Image 1 (cartoon, rainbow, N blue to C red):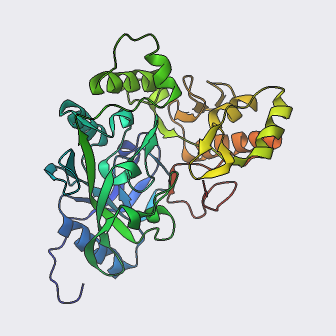
Image 2 (cartoon, rainbow, N blue to C red):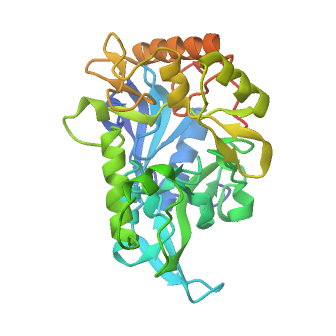
Length: 371
């Protein structure tokens, strides 16, 4: 940090992480700090550097699996909240909302819909915080944040300063960005800016939504589409409901694989029927196949269990903690599913959650997805 003087952050030791995750699994953090402001992040990083301790930045804990041994370094829990609005210079029809990394994502979506701002209504019900949305280019039901993010303010751990990346600099692709690929671990997201459309029409591109509103005698508005997305997600166990074990998950556990047209034809021959698939933007030679369909076709039905770890009874893509599951239990189930799909279709399913505190990435293929 050079000559810059930073106040010492309030560091706690051996803080349990399981209660801070939606899976409810994992050991403690050796060091832990809750960052309420930007300078707390900078000070915490100095603390970690002085001790040569690894760092993990925690948001809502909704897309992670923490090792049973915990995390041996410093966990920074992002607690910077708040939303500010400004005019977007590109168009009077656009509103620029900037939210702190610790702001609840669905709270932001709810407020946007209430204000008549379109662009993220189909991303309703996704757990976690704003800071996590650009990292994995969060998407669902026909929308992804790459379509509305204008800038991401980050702390650059190499340059040791705050800077802003525009949409192009984020290098968004399917479930990917610069933050989880070429510059993994370099940036800590501090806030995110979104351009939302005043009075815009909701997106109704996704099949589930079109089916939901089939026969509707009027064009649904933003609140109706948000309600529909929440209802659809709830049926699949993808909305956090206290007391419902089907919701004690990390969300979608596997990425939808992208395969060639010939591979898709081979799958159809193997199953004796059509294979559901979706086009890949900018790539006419490949298609995206639902991982949930592959899992069920490989013999893993909803509710399938391996001890206290199981597949959700509502959606084959969610692995759940039925109560008392360890990280080792979830990994064993993950590997069983991966092996079954590989044997049936020759396709490697890549996990979507981050693995925290593991000495080695516990996946069949440690390479990042290129989807």
